[in-house]
Image 1 (cartoon, one colour):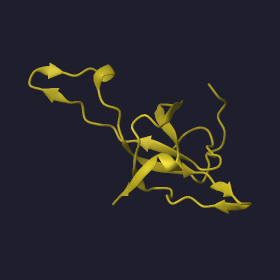
Image 2 (image 1 turned 180 degrees about the horizontal axis):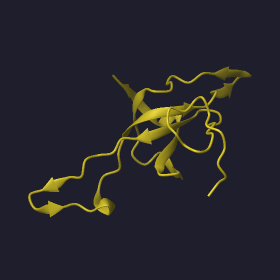
Image 3 (image 1 turned 60 degrees about the vertical axis):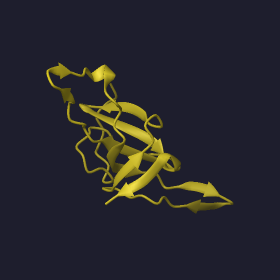
Image 4 (image 1 turned 30 degrees about the vertical axis):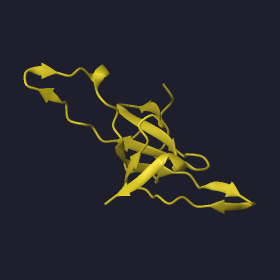
Length: 110
């Protein structure tokens, strides 16, 4: 487990480490899907679909293209739709966060 560091001002959560995504990466907190129930059947976690919506909690500075930095189209606090298998999950305390490339974000919601 990484040592506790100061929280970044770019984060709206209360993680114990500072997150600073590089290049065109975005950190997302996935929305919890309600547990599906079909009658008396309970679908286990291992069989559930991965979530595809979440809130952006940190963004990188953007990628370099022809010597100039290209800013990202999404910002902190926005709700986005991202590719199902495009995210890299990691754990920060009790929160499971995802890192995705900006090109894997499909749309902003709302």
